[in-house]
Amino acid sequence: MTVTVGQAGLGHWGKNLVRNFDELAELTWICDADEARRVEFGGRYPNARVTASFEEVIADDELQAVVIATPVPTHYPLAKQALEAGKHVFVEKPPAMRAAEMEELVALAEEQGLVLMPGHLLLYHPGVLKLKELVDSGELGDVLCVYGNRQNLGIIRTNENALWSLGVHDLSVILYLIGEQPSQATANGNAFLNKGVEDVVFCYLRFPSGKIAHMHLSWLDPHKMRKLTVVGRDKMAVFDDMELEQKITVYDKAPEEPTGTYGEWRTRTGDVFSPKVANDEPLKLECRHFLDLVENGWDGREMRDGLEVVRALELLTESLHGH
Ligand SMILES: NC(=O)c1ccc[n+]([C@@H]2O[C@H](COP(=O)([O-])OP(=O)(O)OC[C@H]3O[C@@H](n4cnc5c(N)ncnc54)[C@H](O)[C@@H]3O)[C@@H](O)[C@H]2O)c1
View 1 (cartoon, protein in one colour):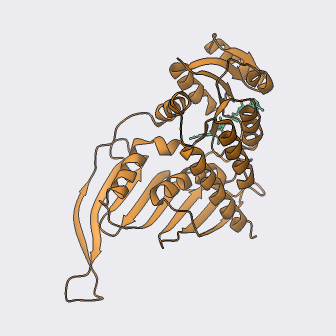
View 2 (cartoon, protein in one colour):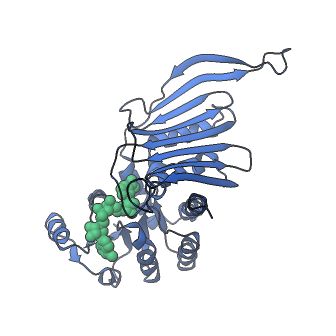
View 3 (cartoon, protein in one colour):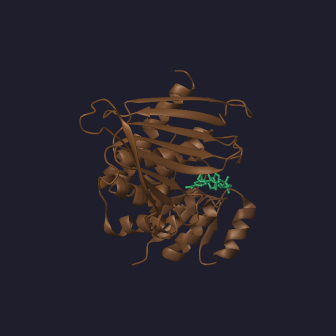
């Protein structure tokens, strides 16, 4: 049976989600506060009912799942309303701006036996899955540090800072690769263009095992970078999403301590290779995964991981604002 889906938010990103859900599920409602968008998308998806009222969408007893792609501050109230109405929820990242709110959503979904999946797109990227495989198989040796570069002279946002807009992506991947919660999270940044909205943010994370991570997040930068580097004890790997073909590069490079030379480190430089990474569209994989959870049940992993991301974002925000 095809899952019935209603989507709220048909903006820059919402249009991609709605295209996929129309293809993979039965799109029965589309909802946007903006009239021009309602007219445009109503024409594109004639089988879906069109409304400006989210309440009208969730009042439909036939509707199983809701997709939320509205601006970030509306995620928590809309997701809460949808869960209370008994709907499975896919909500764009981050589902809430406070850990306490995310905890509330998780508790509600658990209580109601509903799916609550945050839109952490990169966790469905075949390149990130390959990186995780390299880490988990021990190919890289013990992971020592991970760092992300997400910078560009890009869209200058006014309602979310670089940490919330860009950092949420890298953070979801760093926590996924390391598999621990940070014991220390500090951030430094500045709002150069719009008062109170940091456009350049540097973050530092330390984990209980001693692993460390860093994120450079900025929309004031000459380089367009979408890169994650993992330094292992035996090998190093880079995921570069700007590369068309070589998304992952593994460097057989490491420090070595030859026998009998205690404390004297040398470096080893071996092959550099690029493993095959499937070309599947991450967004389609993500949408399909949500529908699969709705149809076949789940253990709540995705929403608990989403909660850890919001917790880490909250810690970093407190540090950024000097609390
Ligand atoms: N996963 C990703 O890679 C990715 C990329 C870009 C954006 N996003 C996320 O997608 C979300 C939307 O971003 P966007 O760039 O499409 O924003 P946008 O401003 O282009 O679109 C938001 C739409 O929501 C509508 N809207 C606002 N409040 C509403 C409400 N209460 N009910 C119904 N409609 C409402 C607006 O009219 C607008 O059409 C954000 O949460 C953003 O973080 C995710």
